[in-house]
Length: 127
Image (cartoon, rainbow, N blue to C red):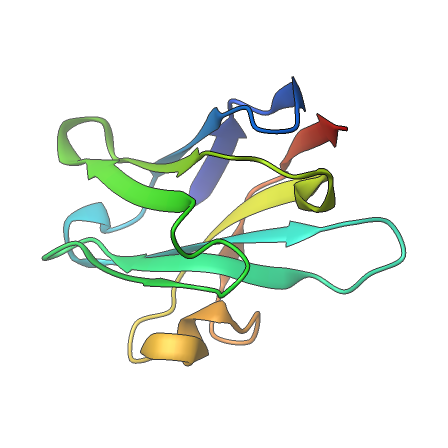
């Protein structure tokens, strides 16, 4: 049974930073495809970034490119999303997902490839 557990959310002022973590269990982390999504109230869930854990190939949405960085710790089966220069419009529930094998580039930012989802961690950025 695949489980994804997010952590690291919180409240920060604009310009601040947060690092989100996604710990995976029951998933072939060493050769997987994982992504981060976010959903603000009244809006659709949108892709933020995706990563192939074998080789650390990454893809970012325009909204986070240059500010957000994905990394991984294979020993901990954990993917991280480092978010810098946060803006109020980054406020949302952030979700980790897994299962995008066979999808690349912008396809990794669609919800459809993903079979597994975490419960989310809230990020609030104040101006």
